[in-house]
Length: 190
Image 1 (cartoon, one colour):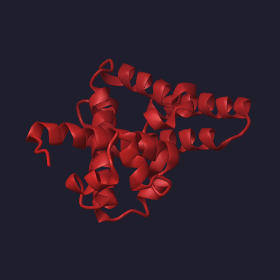
Image 2: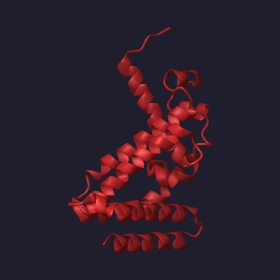
Image 3: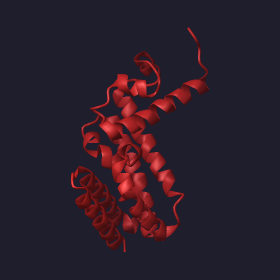
Image 4: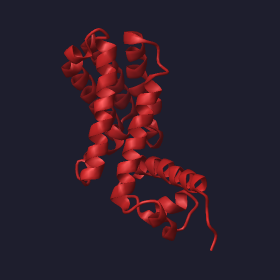
């Protein structure tokens, strides 16, 4: 039996997390079995337990990774409110709507995360706090705590708008929801 270095194991674990994140957001957590997730990562089912205690453990790691990456991406935006506008426009774009596997885990998985175990909920809570902190800092750089309520409203508005746009079969109506969502979010953020 081959022995792998810690680096190899970490690279493999990261590949599983990345592929699982994409699959979860595309097919749902409940719609993604371990055999499919491992196949996506180019591994056998037996390798799963060398990296994770359970599927719930994997879900918690995926959520933490996905939300952490989302917050890191915010650092590449323009500073302040200009960056916030860029974020809103990108988040509520047809590209984001049409590619859930590559997008925000909140819009794709929120209903399922609510039914997950404590580990996944805790990972989501930490990630949501980080996102809200970023939004509040952009809304009120001098006093982010004063903008926390507005940040919560903006976050829930954006996530709900994206979820609704994805649920509509009428493309024109879906585009209208996104466009109005951008207008509403920008007005709310003022």
